[in-house]
Length: 186
Image 1: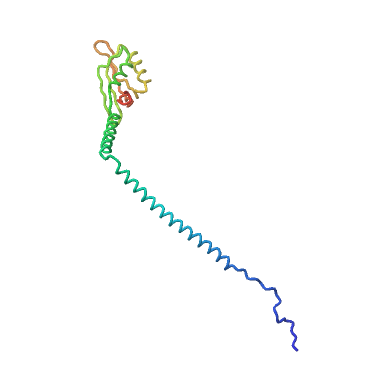
Image 2: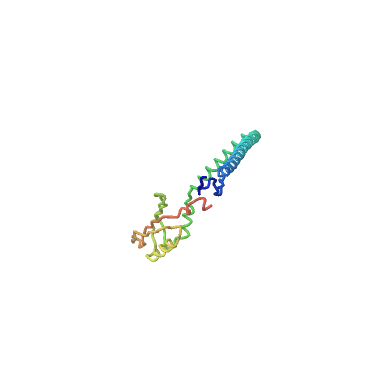
């Protein structure tokens, strides 16, 4: 008889194998079903959009048939004329408001005998020459122009005395564009 201390049977508890293959198979089947469902939804939504576009196109063609093309062309010409008139009106200037402004803001002791108006690099330049009864009147006129927002940077220069004893001077300034805008002064 042979005796051995090594048992012939394995008495160790059997390890159960975890079935990872089954779990991954279940997850992949679920993902596959979701992908097929989404693909079907996209297909049916695409078919719905195509049919909706066709329906709207048919409705649009029916509506086009009911329109009066002559009236549309006439209204289109009227619209372009209106836009052109608006552009002309926006660019139109009127010096009447400038003369009214000078009349209201010129002292009684001041008389302008030269008027020059010019546009230089989008600036409206006003140049005036005139006579006054005294230097104080010119200083007061300078203050009136300097405080007015329609006259920008007035410069009084060329002060002198003429043969009749009047004080001569020149004024150069920029003017605010809305002062001569026909649209602003309607």
